[in-house]
Length: 168
Image (spheres, rainbow, N blue to C red):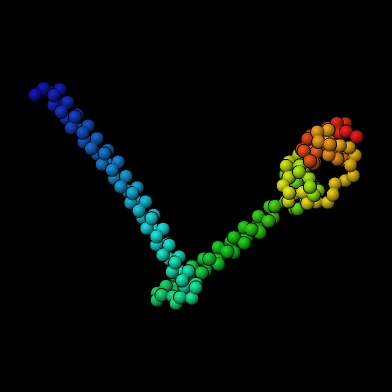
């Protein structure tokens, strides 16, 4: 047998070993993924059983022996979550624009106004709850809505109002 034949045989064996090893690694990875999915399913099932037991205890069923500490811990965590959610709601309320103002620029947004007269942003029905607009000094050339001096955008259609373009 020549050197080249031995080299070819050895290289072929090594390539088969590498291929077999890679196939085993892929299979192990697949199996680990399946195990992870099954374990996640088990955790979900365990949690469901725990929720069912907790609901029964909350409904008046006596607490099974040995679960008093866990039940007390669940109640503490539920109370803590409620406090945290209330704090988030308080912070959310501070971030909301005041009623009757444009959420984008803070300009007054009279009731029924669909667009901010300062920045042109679209308003939701709850944004436009402010005091009535000032007396009209002209009309929007696009839709005919009343417009006042200094108003940059039509409150009804959002049309840009350039000085001198309002209809009398």
